[in-house]
Figure 1: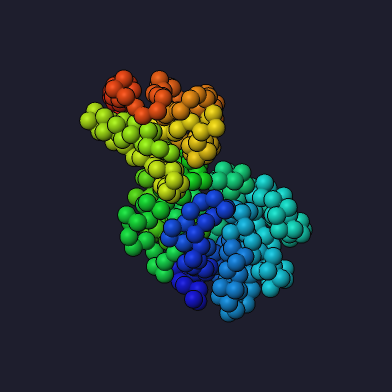
Figure 2 (figure 1 turned 120 degrees about the horizontal axis):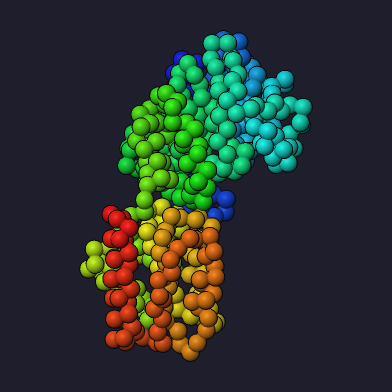
Length: 392
Ligand code: FEO
């Protein structure tokens, strides 16, 4: 695929990774991804914004065949899916400088062994003229590493946002064509890597709010030529209240916990609460992360195994603790055979969640009438709490 024109002297370069199914050996990519780089050929100087994952280097280097010079390689984010090919681009374009934030400089040296004298750091708000095109660099830390920045092309009102507003979708469509599909992919991406830094993301959104943005060009997924909806979606995910929703990850060994989960789910629905259950044996953790963006309550269902929670339930609790969703209430349900410290162990795994813990429901063996009544009481309590908070 050759480079593709976005507007006058501004081009998409990069690669479509149709087959990638896992990122960071952790995050599922059900729809593959793209690595977007951008070329801005100004009257006097030419800049390349980001590169591609090293696995896709051939694609980028082929697109650069007809590009006679690059003066600046802007590295908006030091993670290797964007920075990993910078050393090869530097080999091709002698004299090119790498432009990045001061924090990124050390990371690029550490991760890629870039020579320090080829790196130029830019302050927050600093501009770089390419002649008839002006790049403005805006530091946006923790999207999702500490060194991240975005670049605003003033003349064309394009925000190059790197991971910010990105989505993992492999496609040949340069611009967003299916808003619903991109909304889901962008939400999944936000949940997996940005939700833990919601407070800083809020400041970054505030920082960008007065920019007249006509186009958002992220480094994964499609370009937004009508970006108002994705800007609004991010505001909702970061600033909005949680929804009247219970997320219910669970695992069951001999159906006792499963019966409890089913009963709780039905009682919650009867009380007007939405529920998203996730059987952890088969679940896609990206979908679980996405549901946590909206959830007001998290209930973990687990049997007791080897005197503690099932390892899959422990993993779900660990993940929720790391992602720091805006949940307000938490409970645990499950069954045990003879004893253990399941509730204490799980509760100790979520120190990052600032939640009110609702009385767990645990039982020995199959749930009997008393346990089922306790589950209905838990559902009624959750519904009342959601109503009190005005969650809809
Ligand atoms: Fe797409 Fe944080 O790298």
